[in-house]
Image (cartoon, rainbow, N blue to C red):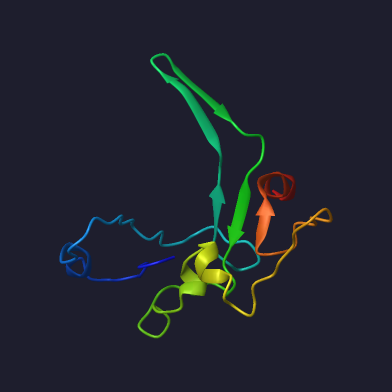
Length: 119
């Protein structure tokens, strides 16, 4: 979550004096419970030629802690609405932990198998 920001101006990114990663914002994201989410998928690549990739059978669905509203001048700084990063959302009082042996897939982090079963 360090150094992450949203911008509508490409100059904000081009004028940085460091290596960075930029990505384009999805205009109409798929939502879970009215919140943005991303998938953390684990793969192991054992060969590039021939290509051999193993996909772990499960992963994480990371869900924002604030309901999504399209970015505008009043909510651009609300990282918990626009970014799914654990480092950002864990500080929110709305962050829901669902960990341990009784993992019920109700919190801010859920399993991909939960997502597939709910579709």
